Length: 132
Image (tube, rainbow, N blue to C red; front, side, top):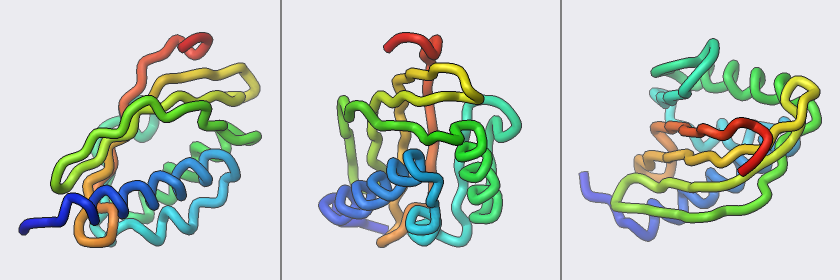
């Protein structure tokens, strides 16, 4: 299936806006509404490590994120956006309190776009939590 790269970028930017708003506020419904029913996500560690399937699992994950960062996570910069016909990768920096401890990170998230929805998400990070 051929997709319009401009639409892919538009959909991914909207999803990223909803995603970062969810990180800051804990309100995830707008982001969840953009996910396909067969949505999958990959996370690099912890209880959600590896491949996860379905919107319900995504909702559990996002609730876990909000509980771990009860005061929210603040996006401090978007360093790079890279895209092709179906995938958009956002590289950014964020900070907050993780379980009450100072947290700073460099993160890359990848959204796969199917039509006007997000069908897959992958997250990559690797900071020591104290510096960029």
